Amino acid sequence: MVDATVPGAISEGAEVHARSGASRPIGGSEIGRCLTRVHHDRFTPAEMVADPIRERAASQGIAYEDAVLAHLVATHPDAVDLRTGDTQLARRDTEAAMSRGASMILGGRLVSTDGTLVGMPDILIHDGTGYLPIDVKHHKVIGAAGAPVTPAPIDDLLSTHGEPVPFRARRRADLLQVTHYAAILADRGVGSDRSLVGIIGTDEPLMCVWADTADADPDLTLLHRDYVRDAQRVIDHGRAHPGRPLVEAARQPACDTCPWRSLCLPELARRDDPTLLRGVNAGLRDELRAEGIHTITQVADLDLLSALVEPDAILQARAVTAGGLLRADDGSEPLGLTTTPLEVDLDIETYGQLTYLAGLAITTGRSTEYRAIVDWTGETDGERRVLTELFATLADLGARGATVYHWTGFEIMRLSEGAHRHGLAIPGAASVESWFADHAIDLCDWSRRHLVSPNGHSLKTIAPLCGFRWRDDDPGGLQSELWFEAQLDHDLEMRRRILAYNEDDVLAQLAIRRHVRAAWDDIPRAI
Image (tube, rainbow, N blue to C red):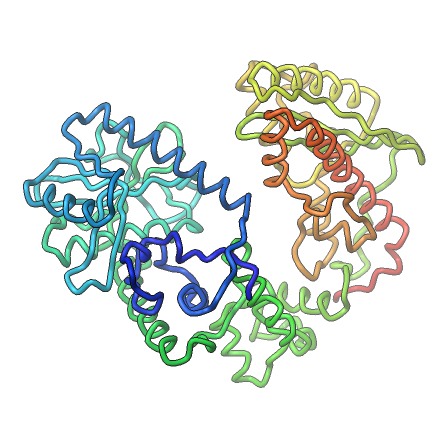
């Protein structure tokens, strides 16, 4: 049995009762999913194992969707709300509402004329020619760069003439999902004449962003059509060969949250599969195999000037083969981590948008003291108290010539947001950003420039390679949010757990510096 949660149990395809996974229609939540997972979802036996982080994310998504749809119900009294009740009745009621031209349908159910595709669009809105689909997502969808989409205010959803904004490239699956709904609407002859699909994310102000599938690059309609064709091939193969997926597994970002990762990733590691390297996808793996290169070890032997694969992948392959960190430089660059009399490692913990804990490991010589600035209420006033004390502490540390270390830009971003939210500032500094620029070093950024890692540059990856271990057997920021919720419910042991986890995070940064300083000359070079 695989230690996994069966995603098919909650997917749109599960609407059709008394059917096997093999014959279950393809639902919108599956579109764009790894085809190996499509096979496992339908044909691989799995024990239902609770995943608290995934369950929490799902419940937060449902709550956000309900809040958005409640707003639409309040502002559109003629909206047809089908979110409760029997699924089969909802499908019938959706068709009835569309037949009479309802202006807005919430929680509708769609099925293609041949029964092979199903969908549960959060919103269907009639634009005078037919229905446009919209889905609500509990994440931001507007980024700094990406394909252009047109924003429309939440209270005027059909206002599609605003200035384009960039849609986050890594959220393209959202657009494929609503393209799936548009395909079903077109199949049933009730779709709009306009080729628009909409997403409502958590971006502020609240809005719907519209993508034109006819003009999208890449072509969303073509991507959807090809995906449905390939998924059907996988399903047809799985009927005859339930124990052998048609599509070979390949490492990709979606693996991080896939319930089948415990099945696929060990097999990829056993094969020394090149897709475990960043930048090597299944297509590039096939190209490498055509050149006689089948393993990470073989990639490591390539010259950095090879046209077969990017240099970063070759360097990572060398770190994997070496079994640890390598130096990224050729020996000409200085270490860049000179010891100062006063060093401070900083890490914050957040719950939702609130910063409730700032942990500092203050090191003078060989002596290190951990200090926690914390508020357990989960209230805005509590965050203000934490930030006020932290900002005063940072100002004092800066005046004393301290060097503050942090991991990634997360602290700068969240502390800057908190400063604006409460009208606070670090005394004597023009802004949070300027204070960090003068007194702090992003240790993650340093590691990316100076070290080659076999598996990324997260703190939880680099510190163990430097000999550090967390006391908690399940450390992580998402886990700590669950612990914080538990302490809000008076589980005071969770407070101890959070403080120990935060202390280990700052001590991990210190351990990395001490290891690198002591072992720098002995760390092998990747070049």
